[in-house]
Image 1: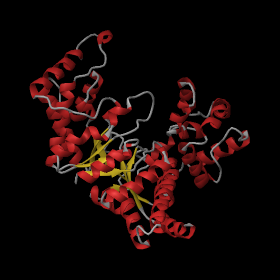
Image 2 (image 1 turned 90 degrees about the vertical axis):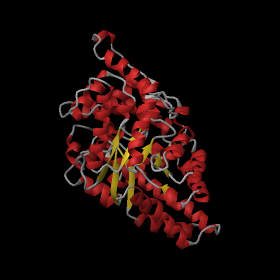
Image 3 (image 1 turned 120 degrees about the vertical axis):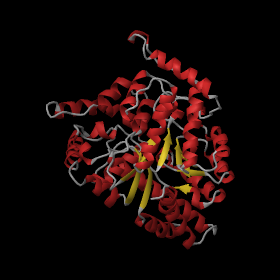
Image 4 (image 1 turned 45 degrees about the horizontal axis):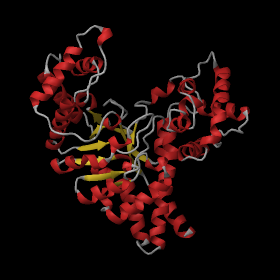
Length: 431
């Protein structure tokens, strides 16, 4: 097993890969914003583990604030004293290991634990700040991670196309909650919203602009806000809901609030899906565990999307996060439907063990051309490094086990690794 694993791991580590999902800075200049090591690294999913372990929200808010030149070392030390008591509670998790692998690979140190001396914190922060220089995108994404391109999800089509290809979100059209969203859409599209027809016109323009400007997919993230089960509503029912929202826009500020209209959401979801089907687009959909706290896990079960897969055979659905913890259901759906693809973005750091078990099951059940092996799903650049290391390691372990058991030959294992890490996303997104 060790020799097999080493052979496959060496091959996998040399592969150029495509990253199917990121939330990174769109431009390298954004790295110039005032941060420190803690404010940057705790924008990762580790913050969820810290909250789960008992950290108060106000403590997390303090840790997330960037350190200014004036406050400098004093503020950094205050953050360290605040963070230190919690680290022993969460150093077992994959989120912690991701950051430890990152710090080791990029800075030659380790992510702090409760015993780390203050001098080491200062040294790590110094190295982190020194690395935020021109050329950092090239160094981390291309040279360290061997990422040819990353699919970027930042609500903005404008991004550095040397490293990214954008996706486009229509969530605000499908589920508008406040008048501020409506006003932002007016600004973005240049269309004055005086009624439902204007809303549909603005949505169509937004979708057409995205396609014209090279968006490789649409993205749906509304499992954070509602169930993925969308029924059908008539246009008149949707218009009534929309007019209620439109009326709310003109109320005095003290009476304005959140708005929910299920008929509008249902109609707009299918309106967007019809456009995607006509243009034979890819639709990326968040399923499974939600980041942050609190939420309703059952809202994001990929089984709720079953109707979409039947009604829209011309859309390729890229289903995120292996649907964890519903990955067995996703395996069945991807096997049943030609237009359903599995995306392992985020999964490798949610649980490496679950990801390895899931990948072994996916390889047993689903055509290998329908598995996308890696997406960093990171808010900051460094985190991609540790995540892709863990993804390559997980994939290598699964394939080595398959070779050892005689399920696949060494040649097949290498071919499948390149498929899921590079060729599949390249073909799916037309890169």
